[in-house]
Image 1 (cartoon, rainbow, N blue to C red):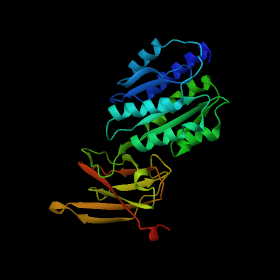
Image 2: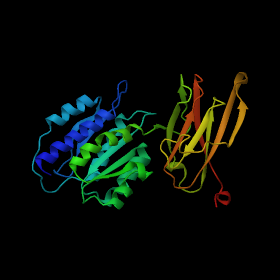
Image 3: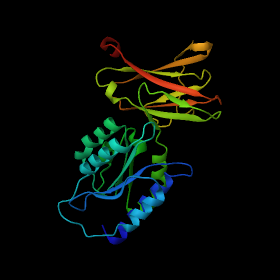
Image 4: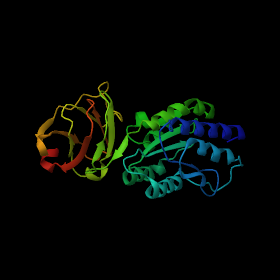
Amino acid sequence: MSNLEFGLLKTALNNIAIETNPVGSSPYFGVYFFGATTQLHVVAPFKTSSASMVKTYLDQKQYTMTQSNPSTLVSALTLVESDCALHCRQSTPRVTVVLSTAPSSSAEVAVRQLENNRGMIVIFVGIGSGANAAVVNQLASHPARFYALRVGSMYELVLSAQHIGSVAADVPRLLSINQPLSISSTTSGVYYIVQLNTFPYVTMNDTIVMFASNCPNCQVFGSLSEPNPISENTVPNLNFRSFYAGAGFPNTLYYFRIPRNTARFFVSLRSNGMSAVSILFDIFTLPEMLST
């Protein structure tokens, strides 16, 4: 990497951070450089709380010649997981953007571990001719058609930075099984989207995910291939059952069948403007005789 390419890399990182920090948001950032020195370099420590602070840290980082015995992507992902264990917040999107000119499939185990243990989405950006498309797809989170990206050069990376930041900003919030989510006020026609980390529950058999909501007229969409399922790309789920909770208030249960070894499931609720909407997910496993 030349001094010019290093400057372009910092510009791209700054633009990605700006795109993921719109007015009114409060993201946490961390920037880690790997591959050129014997140890990882923490450029911006997690939890840096604004894109402007990311720029301040990046401006302080100066170009140095490549050294031998480089640090690895695996060590970088290990540090990301460690920092996330300490500082990641519940019900917030968790995203790691990896930029690499020479990705190696040896990092796949570390990527899957970060996804499964921390609910992380990994957006993998391969740069230049050394970034093999198959390896980039292998290392990115599912669905790869959204989260695996390739650019031809550092110049192209700068041009693509806003898009990369937009993809990161569109990752839905993470919700755990049996973790209630309350939305105090909704806007009619707006989609409220969450993702479930289903991998711990579907390693053996197919699984049924039950989605409960107190919004009886809200459309519900679920998808394994669309991170943001809406009416334009997904058919609404009509497999539901209505029931009455306390004080005669109507609730609705929806059911989704999830194939074994599925890591991610995305669900959206299209609001009708109702206030105080609550949603909850539960899971139960199909017997083997019903899974085949």
